[in-house]
Image 1: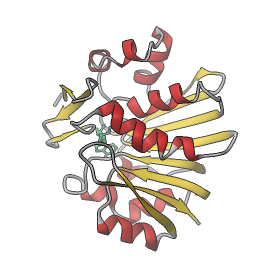
Image 2: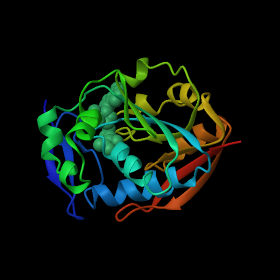
Image 3: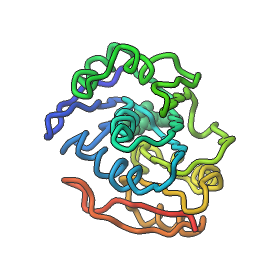
Image 4: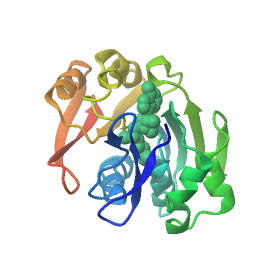
Length: 217
Ligand SMILES: C[S@@+](CC[C@H](N)C(=O)[O-])C[C@H]1O[C@@H](n2cnc3c(N)ncnc32)[C@H](O)[C@@H]1O
């Protein structure tokens, strides 16, 4: 079932999945949410010259595009690996308005939305690999410095947030690596702690009291 576009309160668009009954981003602002949780608490906090990023739930590609744009300020070498079971169509991607807002060239927008399962060098500093796979079947092969955990909520997809699924990716997180997510539920925090993560609760974007940033000790 094709997700529908939805206009959020900051003027940016997201998608609504009828199948899962959830929006891809906060209804209070897709750009605002992505910037606050993934870019400001996640990406900007990593002080390394080369950063390997894993995103669970690539969706529209917004977090990837915002990371790409943030990296233009003080460029680092980025490897961005997005995991997605249900890639959106090129037509849906074009309807999001991200191409115009972020001033993406044809080449850039294609690399963020088409030709899955192959790494693409979008610039000399940014490689994106969008992998079309069920996260439950994904076996990470390499190490990551940063994890964007952006699955649908545990109420809708509990298995995505299971201890085993968290374990397999956190095992591959480098020491001092960072895990960020919009969810701050107690059972998630307990699992993260049991997996050796140091958790800090941060205030969330509009409409969300708290979000989580966890570091590997
Ligand atoms: C909250 S949305 C992600 C939003 C996305 N980060 C963005 O910026 O647009 C959750 C995503 O997880 C994907 N998804 C659902 N089940 C999945 C699964 N089993 N494996 C991988 N991805 C899945 C959905 O298709 C959706 O794109």
